[in-house]
Amino acid sequence: MLPSLVYVGMDIAKATLDLHALSTSPQSRQFVNRPAGHRALVRWLRALGPTHVVCEASGGYERLVVRALQQAASAVSVVNPRQVRDFARAQGRLAKTDRLDAAVLAEFGQRLQPTATPVPSIAQCQLAELVARRQQVQQLRNAEHNRLEHTTHPAVRRQLRRHLVCLDRQREQLDTWITELVQAEPALAHKVARLCAVVGVGSITAVVLLATMPELGALNRRQAAALVGVAPFNRDSGPRRGHRLIGGGRAVARRALYMAALVAAFANPRFQAFYQRLIAAGKAPKVALVAVMRKLIILLNQLLKNPEFLPT
Image (cartoon, rainbow, N blue to C red; front, top):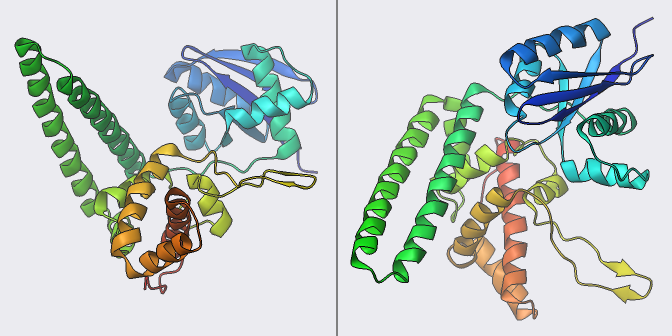
């Protein structure tokens, strides 16, 4: 008989990794969140037999250990922290420590059996880092530009202008690196070209979507809309029929999609007719624009999913 799969919860902190394995005799261990600790973790998991590690997204502290586990051919799932916390609350578990969180993650994995997180390619990792850095530079530039508008001291204004010039150069350099990376990867370049075939979607929007939604092209309609956070959710109770509201999703992808939808609603004949029809039906402009966003992400997902599908 094949050995049973052991679910292992892993709570990730900056310096440590707390683990709890739901084996025949449950056991807990702690490792340092450093390469040496990652190697020791892999050896410990191999001694347990077939394992499936479940951890939360931890603001980036999970990246190196998840990569080490994937390179060691260990199944690992990076799950939404909100879902795990809701799972714990549903069981009446209100206490929260690193060791308790690891035990909750192990039970979450055993009960819900999440799918393993796909192993990203090197190009995908590099693209994600470049796009994340571009977002950071853009946010810094917006903040400095706002400060410049309300600053009167001449020396401070000169300093702000110099910083804005520096940030503009950094953004241009990042755009160059992103372009070079896309051109060097034929598969990535093909995806960008497919997305840019839709009027309203530019190269920056395309790379942001591909960097923040690597699943794009492998989803169904509902999954694509929910992942970017433009799927409306019911708010009904008894005879009451509440407004449908969007929520969740990936904020960076949603912001990029918003700008693309704003252009498409007025420049793309297909989406322009759809937008105007909703406005004529009495929908608020922002509600109609969210509907355009949903229709647009479904179209983009279909373009990557079906090579023969045409954007028009």
